[in-house]
Length: 291
Image 1 (cartoon, one colour):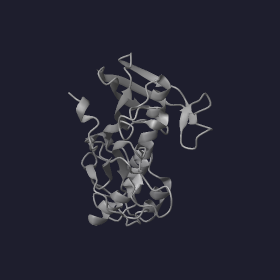
Image 2 (cartoon, rainbow, N blue to C red; image 1 turned 30 degrees about the horizontal axis):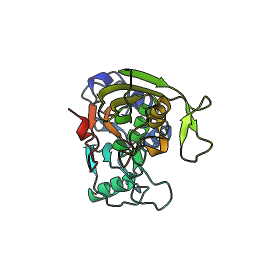
Image 3 (tube, one colour; image 1 turned 120 degrees about the vertical axis):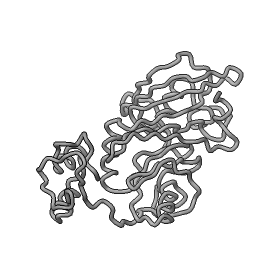
Image 4 (cartoon, rainbow, N blue to C red; image 1 turned 90 degrees about the vertical axis):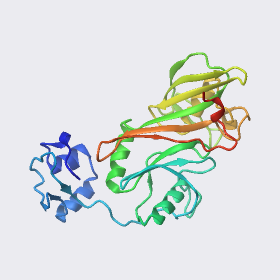
């Protein structure tokens, strides 16, 4: 990589350990093997770098995919040598939940990599429920995976969801700050619980549809609890349309929830990346409510 202006004066050690906070085991491995070069010379790990210097280090290793490559047509929203964003359709798990499982988004991503001649472990950075559609982020190497994991935990990856809720929500916008825990009476369900984990959902009403008694809403999350948006709106008395698990109507075949936008800074270059996930439902759910 070419050293950007904002890294000028930093050393290779600063970049790996402080800026990227790369895995210590990986840093130790490449350092001991003298695999890091600066302008094609053996790196002085503590020397300050200048803008335009070339920092070379091994990043791409052949690794088993970790899942079975399995063909399923998927839309790739963004891809480079470090990461990939895929548009998950409904009825598909994000990743296998048991050994040998195929038919998940991770299996489809592995097949995509295989067809492109890439042999790298498939690592999802976040997940979507089986019947929630939209953008899902994957890392393609150990360094980008570690940085993206940290960015997610530090809320530096913005995920914006669109949903249709049953009923006409009163406030135009708001924040739901209610902890979510397991439902003791149901193996799959979650519920608002004082002893649950912190869960914060910000929302705004994009449109009310009185004729259908629906609210078209946009949500962003400070946390990523299982079923978070579904639980919070059900608790408010406005379950997502189609979400029969949480008391929603049977208007749609699935809960009307779509991860519409994914925004973040590239883990290595710092470039701003904005992904917009198209709608995949047939018959359509969201197209009919967008002006």
